[in-house]
Length: 492
Image (cartoon, rainbow, N blue to C red; front, side, top):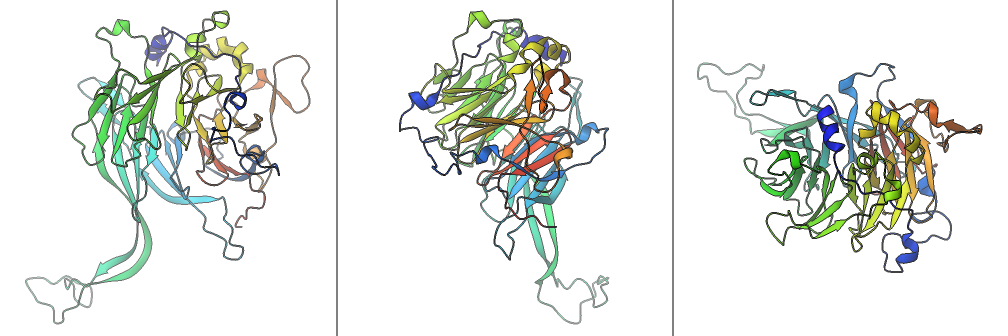
């Protein structure tokens, strides 16, 4: 880690400029945020800022085992399944509770559907390098039949998994007698039975279908499935590879930023994602705070970007830490494909794909930590990689922070809320109370002092249900699920 930190410190920086409202500069053609609900509810109201506790998964032990720490969270395309990966290489899939037959309404609770070991620790003998089993990313494929498919990756290897149900078993192959004993010595059965299926106890099977390996020299930080459902990309610090889901022995290198002399290295790739609708378009972010949009129709090697999104640097705000905090840790397209969000250490930006010079909106996540950057650098927290996500209607954004806080921003009202994932607030249907952080001086009763924040309790991974108002938040080894429907039924 120390080596990577030394690399990050040498990167050039792009700093954030003050808030810039897209509502003034984008008229009626803005499709993402132009819906207004006069009742104050729905996508444009404040329902996205009111959340209620639904459930929590995980142990209550004070001492957390390293393999149990959740490293990624992802809903599938209809939100019926929720997958988590941990540092122990395990994937746990949760399934949403079915509709209540009496009321017809849906619960927001999820129960374990399947658990399997996705990756094992390995050792690269050529490089004398240990390869961790930690799951870095999980991405679901679109469902085509009764089975579900997902991609999971650790630092070096991507695997395609099939998760399916078995409710029947084939019997009657005339291999056993009536007592269940095998026919031995060529003895023929007295009667022949036509093979048939019989019901059996439901069994969930997870089987590896493809293994995509030996294509990355550096640690994989991103995978993204193309909208054509035939290809996907995998990105490490210096390269992005394009894979066909049916071909495991070769991939195509589409981005390579590795310099001839590694001493000239100025930036690394931090995240990459395909456009949700245009199969030829993808973006990747860098440690310089820039986002490059590439069009695969222009050339086979996308070293020359089609667009670059960056802000002009503000010399007055430059400091020793500017280069580090400007590094982008996550980038996500909106469901409409018109916008994208990027997360750096202190803020989250919203970009219009038609405007490259500045974001259309910038939300401060934990600006109160700017005065603590020195101590955060010393304890390595300044290098934490926070993820971000959109809600299903592209009207709200969520990301994590420290002290098990997470932030939700309403893109229409420009309002935001700070909430906490804690077992102390885990009463059924308990409404989450908004948290405020005091930066000094006289602290109000309900405020939390910035000096009392626990930087070991952090929320790096979050996911938003693609259709309903349900969110999943990973806090160390616990998975919290909240919903914004106060009338949602919960089974007892």
